[in-house]
Image (cartoon, rainbow, N blue to C red):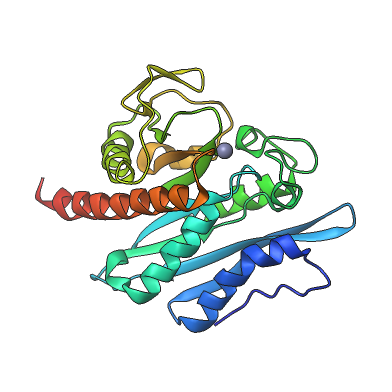
Length: 268
Ligand SMILES: [Zn+2]
C-alpha cells in the first residue's frame, strides 16, 4: 500500500528521482510501506521527509525496531541509495530481516539534498541540532519520530570527504562497539578502512571513534542508553557504487549481529 504521493508540481526533479525507486518498491512489495513522517514549507515550496518501513518474518513477540537514517547531510547520497538497495534486497529475501521491523528515512534533509549542500536551506547543520530545542522543522519532525517510534536501535549513514576509508562512531558504549566492529569488517570487503589514530578531530582505533559531536541524531533523552546508536561513515570521494555496497554490507552485518545478541540474551 502506497500512502506517499509526490506530485510533479510539488517536488523538483532531483527529489523525485530519489523517491521514485522507493515508491516503486512500495508498490511492488506488500512488505514495504511508504508514508510521510512529516512535511514543511520553505521558500514557498513544500518538502516531505518520507518514511519507508519493512517488517521481516516474525519469530513471535515484538519485532526489533530499528530506525535507519540517511541524507541528514544533503551532499551525502550514498546512504539513501543503500537504504533503497537494502529494501530491494529484503523484498527478495525477507528472511534477512527475520525478527525486525526496519523504518528507513532516506531523505532527512530534503532542502540540502535539493541544493547539494551539507546544511539545510536555512544554513544549519541538522546533525548538531538534535535535542537542543531546535525550531527547525526537519528536527521537529525527526525528533517526533525518534520519540514516538520507540526504536531499539538507530543507524545513521554518512559520508566524509576528508577520511581515508570507512569508519564509525560507537559513542563509547560496549553494545554499539560490538555492533560497529563487524559492520566495519563487512565493509572492508568493499572499501578500505580509515585506520588513522585521529579521524574528524577525534581519537580513533581501527576505525571506531568513541567521542562525538553534540546535537547528533540520537535517541530521546528519556530513552537513555537502552537504544543503540551507530554512525557509519564511508569515504565520500570513493565511487558511489562502492559506498553503497559498503553501507549495505555494514547494515546486513548489524542485522545479523544484533539478532544474535537478542537470541543469546535470554540465556545469559
Ligand atoms: Zn554527514
